[in-house]
Image (cartoon, rainbow, N blue to C red; front, side, top):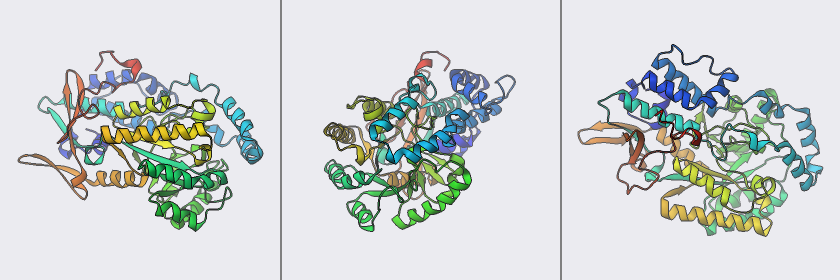
Amino acid sequence: MSRLIVDHYKCPERYTHLVPEREFLVDLRNLFEPYFQVLLANGNQRSSAGGETAPQLLTKAEEAIQDLRLERYASDSHNNVLRSPVAAVYYFFRPLLARAIRQYIQRAYLSGWKKLTIPQWPVDTTVDDLLAQLLLGMLRSDGTTKRIPFIWFWPDGASSCAIMTHDIETETGVRHCSALMDIDAGFGMPAAYQVVPEDRYHVSAAFIDEIKKRGFEVNVQDLNHDGLLFKDEREFCRRAHRINQYGEKFGARGFRAGALYRNHEWLRALTFEYDMSVPNVAHLDPQRGGCCTVLPYFIDHILELPVTTTQDYSLFHILHQHSLDLWKQQIDLIRQKNGLISFIIHPDYLTSGSAGSVYRGLLSYLAELRDRERLWIATPGEVNDWWRQRAQLSIVENGAGFRVEGPGAERARIAYAQEQMGQLTVSVQGQDLSHEESGPIEDCVNSQTRGSGRL
């Protein structure tokens, strides 16, 4: 078994000897061929599955997972927007442009988004699907292994997790934060508020204290939100030093880049514990790509909490939708993978009655899932704490079976992966199992490959 699979599922170390059969890995590669072709085109997967051994193919599958998480498949044309003179001109004049003009320019730029096939809209779970299929292959590789125990993704056996984040863009957003905190509190919704520390508006100590005293979280959003944070590495490092200082000043452990611009390789310059700048599917963002997973993952010392749902701005002003339909569809797809449901909601855009009504409807729906389906609603900081704690836990065997050891073990649950009727199934120990934790993982391949019979 690869190190990546053990670290993701937190299986006992003794299962590291399991390697899927070569034929299984070849079929798996064929199943996800569109993604492998994109990686091949960008120089990340340089050879076919011709004469490679099973361990070599497993290594390539592991590399592909990392390439997708880190968006290494994205072509230069997707990322040139970071260095484009047109982008520099746009952000220079952006403060002077009326919202209607900005929206016109944004819609023009995004006009071809429906033609994009990778990542898969509206939620892409290719990384999670590959991981699940590799686990299935490992079960098949050893006739004596009937099931593999692992540490469940969420504490206390929660089926999935949801986080609410509020990016404050302008002075208008600052003025609406108090009312937004009232709404969140009314639904029992923990949330994180991301502040832009320079130029956009004044961030007073009293404002930071108000957010924290009301039980919410404060994080840093960019430096000045001018769209140029990732223009070049030297400028990023210069700004990162100041961003880190603001993080310390505000007591913030999390970071998000303005407009979700990003460069994974540069994140090591940040001293934050977690980042929230990588979309699952970035079709409606200025920098295209997407990490193709709905679960957190580490980038060196930083935990990435991917943005897995459409931003409110894109929903209201790009797609012109004022309903919960898309969000509910995305929530359902993420819950099928027991993933992280993460939202970006701007206090700046909740000024209209229709937008506010949609947001209240969303909170009501999430509260219903919390009560009915054991959805864990937490702050990003709480998710970060748990994911780091989980990474340090281990499963040990005793005469009666398995137990979890390490700080926080009392909140951990053991899950069991096994094969039933040709599919991977997962059950969580000691739970009254619902759809999310038990039964065949029938969505473990993309919809276009379902029913192919390969696995």
